[in-house]
Image (tube, helix red, strand yellow):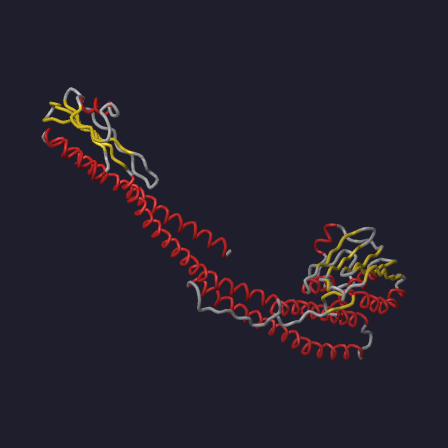
Length: 434
């Protein structure tokens, strides 16, 4: 962004300097050309008014002093003075002057001009032409004057361009420094630093206000994470004790089968809600920089959870196998990864599968079963809270929602699709093996 801003400012500055310098250069050249023409026209007028007996000596002296050639003829074209050139050399100019034709305009003298210019005028009073004067003038001196003036103008333009470049650097630094600070702050929050602040005293008022808003947002995110964590802890403590007391009282009642079932369902729902809130709290704390990323060995966790679920699977007539394809460390807490695998294994065992395969491939964990699977319509809603399919009356509708939230909290992705059963794929950030 800095390069683009500098490029725009420099192009604008150079365009402005060029727009100012170019007309000034042309104006300088035109002014010097006008002085050159006026000077030589005045010389012609003086020679045209001199008496014949004086014009010869004056022409010779003029040629010696200025090194310019003069021809003076009478009304018939007969040379009166030929100083440095002959009447035949400038016959066209003499004829035009004797016919009282206007002279051609003199081209603008430039620094590279080096030729001669012919000036001519008729001699006489009123419309009566008594002769003609032709002067060959060199543009060398005028061209040198123009070159010197152009050098001054270009030097001034160069100084102005340098000043513009310096101003562009100062302005770009003034404008972009707060943005650089904001970028640093955002990166710091993304890397896990809590309550990151940026300087809010530099740059325009709008950027200072934006920096202040970022500081408030950083504090608010950290505070929200703290409040969410406290809420989960308080809810877990305050709700579990009455729940345990309620279950104890229900167990003491006779004929309490249906009531006990509802209590167990309420306990399962409470556990699911607390687990979901804990997963969301983990995501919030990671965003606020309160949780450092942990590492888990995918194969170790998978074998541990499969061993834990094997007895329950056998009781339901389900066979669980593990396919270790490639080892891998993932950036996820061991407890969170275990909870995700528990949810996937629980679903596979609970809903009609007879075979379940857990595949470990570097940073990808796949749980494949041969159950009925889900339709494309149901897969879109499978990770929504409290959603249950037609054959899922035993569940709370929170399992896949909890798993999906845990995985996304660790910058991973949970995918579901049907392929001769339900296939759940968990992709987590990979940690290179040393």
